[in-house]
Length: 314
Image (tube, rainbow, N blue to C red):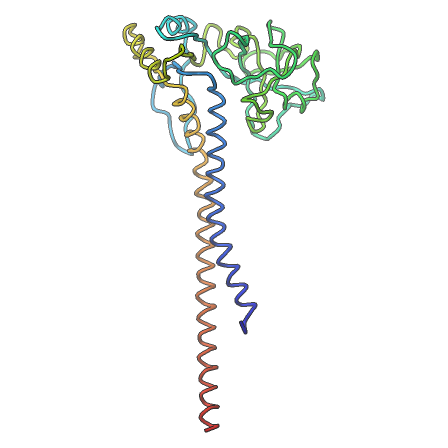
């Protein structure tokens, strides 16, 4: 206690070193949990999906390779719909759709956030229930669009406005804003992404998927589990000779795969922080060791001096 400042500084070094490493794990685990919930929302209401197989193993360098999976034809929807136990089957996709605000600037809430265009089926005729109507109505024609609530606010739009949207393969177009929606029941569930929903056939045209989908989603009839439905669809694909080109997953498996891909892309971030945590612990340990070494050395001298004074007193 005679060296209070040294004691405080030593304690701070210990606390900072440990807190840095603990904070690193807490941060990365929290991000992972966020993405788990996010992709559970993207497959809400979906019991099984059918998609094309990857033509080759994608590269995993620098945290994961790009998607090289080809689209599936419209006809596959009918094949899946005819599988015993399938209540409803629909195609789904996601593509580039950049929303331009009323100020003429792109509506992007966070730098690097995705700008997605999606199909939106009528409420009573949909498999994927991740989109929830918040105002107006769903798009019913090729010149109508619905935006997520966050994008609507950021772009300063209101129902009935004209919204300009740019696409990657077709010329920019203006649409009438007829509705707003929540994704997964939340206003900003996609962490800054902008979402534009179109009538399904129009979405295929704008996303360069005429007559095609990214995948086919299916909902099971009452009493049939995801795993059972997956097995039934896989069996039909084998019988039709389509299993060489297509694969079947449950909705939960797809959500987990997507979340794991994102986590893999974040692994470099975790490693980066851990390196600093290890450095902090090393520096803290070095400071602590030297502090105690100096303290002990000083105490030895003090004890020696006290002994000498005691001997002289005797």
